[in-house]
Image (cartoon, rainbow, N blue to C red; front, side):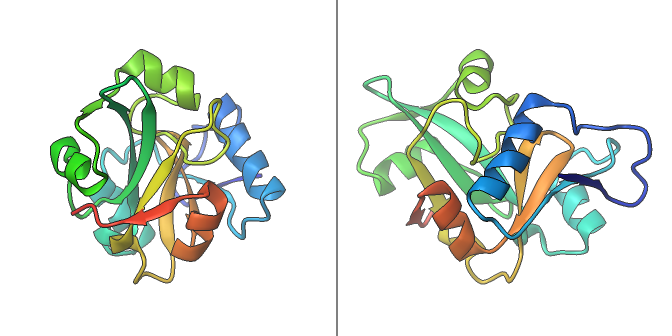
Length: 169
């Protein structure tokens, strides 16, 4: 189920396939949150945090990165710091990580670059979740569309994604 946040009349994302997949995954995986549609006027994580009334560090961003051997992984990070592939490669003991391109992100996640939900993916990806999200009682995560998020807790996010905690920034 997708709910609209205040100030979001007439810009429904509810029919976007990746949003539907996220909402379905939340139910199937027994997640506590629901997908929230946010106003299309919000352009970045800072504006989203302000709209939700939460610290920027409690908003998550996602990225699909490619390994040197062509594998892919999904990173869920606090918006308070950037995802730096070279730094993350060292943390994960990968020889090299690079940004995946728009086409492959869409193919792997069902979402456009920058809005990939870490659940309900079209392909299972190893997932790494930023420990910087852990202190917050609520974490807001992309839900498959630039104007859709879902609320969860850090421990639940690890469970929903079968994710591995990692220090990203």
